[in-house]
Image (tube, rainbow, N blue to C red; front, side):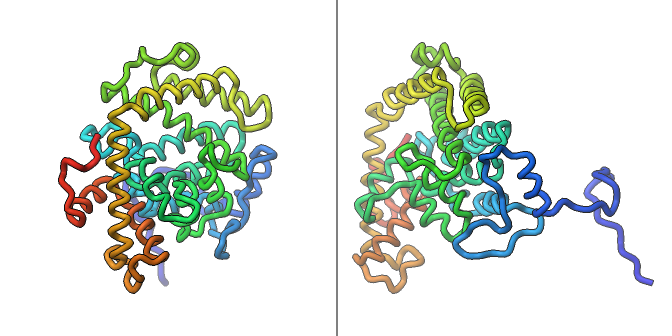
Length: 353
């Protein structure tokens, strides 16, 4: 008589429930969403609405699969080497695009969960929202725009090109494509939460990083910000998130209370004046734009150097698209090294913090 060996343990056994209990599978969990989510929340259904039809997972909802795919992707991992505000900083505590994405997801989920929105969709969109960013932050958008019809927008490029191989759900891609406030409104309330969470997160943590770098001081914040949400990131996030949760509960739409919304707008304006558009920042952004444009021109003339451009005619439309794909995926460090090795740049010409 054959016997089944006991399961392997890492430590002493810890009880989860009764043995041989039924597992709640995906369909049962989807049914629970109808009971527990807000009326306007996005429901998970089967394998989800994808460009390429798939079979549903046994346990995970469609949006949980999206989150897993984004977190396991190379595009997401490369965000660790892409700057948020400071290019390749020596201080390991300053934000990168990766830590920014994680913080946006935290803020977005903190808003979505108590108001009954789909947390998995919210987390997936927030986690992947910046995967279309090139090296050196927003400086890459202007530098890459001349090479694409319609220009380069990190949100659109991230959804339509960078994350396209993951075959994500339509709702996830839409929230990523439209998370920027200069884009059309997202199709779901979860996508709208991500748009707010992105702004809340970067305004607060960019200010904190600038304080750490000695660029501004906490007491420099305007009174219309400090008196409403305080001068520390902990208090600011708490104030903005609470204002959104209470406003959504009271109004039934994704919005922020007027007082905090005015504080957020003033906070963002302060950051632009004192951090993003200060002369040193503009100079480094100009350097980064020249670097990115020069690399793009090089790979348009040498598409075989990208690894996926073999057989592509130099200078062709396809070569331009391949050059943009390759350069936009670079980390700051990789782009700097490519400028030194391929373009013969001097280290003094590279963008720096």
